[in-house]
Length: 330
Image (cartoon, rainbow, N blue to C red; front, side, top):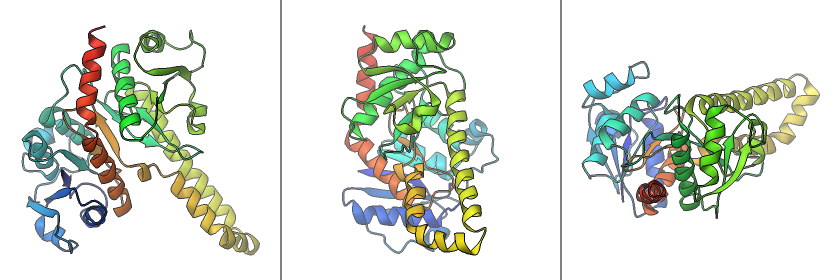
């Protein structure tokens, strides 16, 4: 199995990318990783070359670059070259922690959509109190959506949850402002009807306040709403931990308590870190394309590689294609 990684994407590239790749090949003997980027910089950290090779390029897509223009003009950028290896059949999947918009553009224009998928969806797995996590899609690949798009998101999410996350008969919920069938706007009302007739375990509308309680295994919404939910969850978690830290450091007595509680607090922080679940998959493409978090460390990159390996192993892209074809024949 061949996985290609944009070694220059993300805040901690290439060091953490390389360290994560080396950790992955130690755990999985069935993968071969190609790191695309500045060979001189990569070699500073690459001490294990078994199952890893480097494709040299010095061009990089920057966070400030306009995504579509950058993908079309920077043909030798590390991200674009990684996607091209997948398109050419020289790799089974690709990963990048770089510019999200550019990776979506590279996925669309270089790797290509599955026939029948109108719009791909960007989908991270987010934490829940019980530790199971849930898949949220879309979180920003498309700001606007039609009911038919959300139906496809539900199909793709259910397949991923079952094949990769090992959830039997995953519960699919529609994000809405209430649980009643008649709640919401025209998009959610019309989507509700489509999901009721789909070959999935649709549990109805779910509210944002219940997401972290594990109300569903897969939650579908439009990209604008999904991105707002994602950023709210991320920002709230960061704020709560900052407030907690400030409180625990406010006095000598609380500092003593913090010393005792530190292992439990670190465990809680890791539990709420969605990078532990891997990256955000760009679902609906001909091959797996994974967006790792921009601040990914080696462990987060390792998780993204593990996730990508399982998507390839369980042939998720082809299964999505078959499901969409079946749904279109109804």
